[in-house]
Amino acid sequence: MPTKTVYKTSIKNISILDENGKFDSKLGKDVIPIDDAVRLYEHMMRCRRFDEVAFKLQRSGRMGTYPQNWGQEAASAGAAYVLDKSKDWLVTPYRENAGLFWHGLPMEYILWHWMGDERGNQIPEGLCQTPISIPIGTQPLHAVGFAWAAKYRKENAVAVTFFGDGASSEGDVHEALNFATTMKLPMVFCCQNNGWAISTPLERNVAAEVVAQRGLAYGAHCIQCDGNDIFAVVKVMREAVERARNDFEVTFVEMVTYRMGDHTTADDARRYRDSSNLEDWEKKDPLRRLRIYLEAEGAWDDAKQEALEAQAAEHVREVVKTAEGIEAPKTADIFDYTFAELPQDLIEQRERMRTTSIGLGCD
Image (cartoon, rainbow, N blue to C red; front, side, top):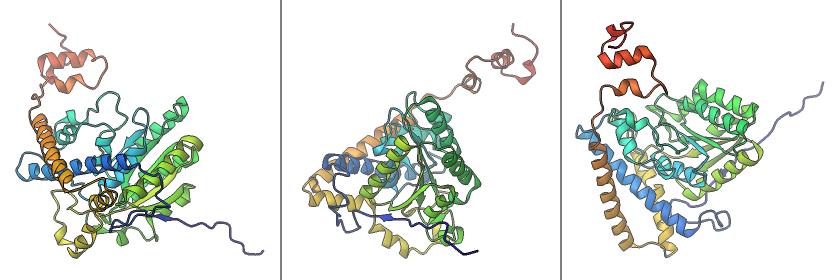
């Protein structure tokens, strides 16, 4: 029998705005209107300020462990920018603050989460997003559920989930990909390839040439983009979301970025990472390159930057004040937020605050 090729493909990498602010006008035409580019820059600057303050809160003992988002703001912000807040779901782990905030989550909820207050996980009514997920790689399965429900109900909604390069090796991610593509669900899988799975470098975690090719095995449309280029992220995500919404085709998007800080405040990346990499990636900072672009377009200057930094600092101060000023939880709260109607035995425990109340009946 003759030998024949049964499968052949390629994966494109998209880059529009490079680290020096050079803009590909042909590829980037009409991707982001200049007014929206300004809004996205202002938003990411506020998120950067929030990240800096959250780090200081942890270091001063006012908050628990915190994972910095520093340098990865464009990936999630660009994704959230193209979503319909009223119906599209954003399902993330813990380094997508910029996207969650753009999608409508008040900043104080993230602080409450890391302060150990479960009210930070009680997403406000009407927001199409989930609490941040700490277990590695489990959230894509949840996103599959939202996408399946949306398709079943004919809601014309899309579910977008994020995970890291390390999580791309987790079985849950592969199960979610297989289910989504097989059932033709309106989904986008976004892998933030930041080079490190805690202390494990990418080359020790993934043997493939690019992480995106992992989606090929499941029949997903696969593409890679510069995750620090807000224009590339928006272009790729807009096409992926439209593909999901209109044709029920799944896309695997690999966003190449870098984790500028430690994995969390409980980590010390100096023990396993060459600091010279940071210098190279600082030049690729998504905020830096977007500012260069806006200045070249005459839409930004030093005066606007100074005003924004002052506004961002004041905004975050108010967020911290709100977070730390929340009313202390009541002991009875542990009973009141699980059931729509509290079972009788738990009513008895709540009234007496003792497990020995079971079966005694209320007075």
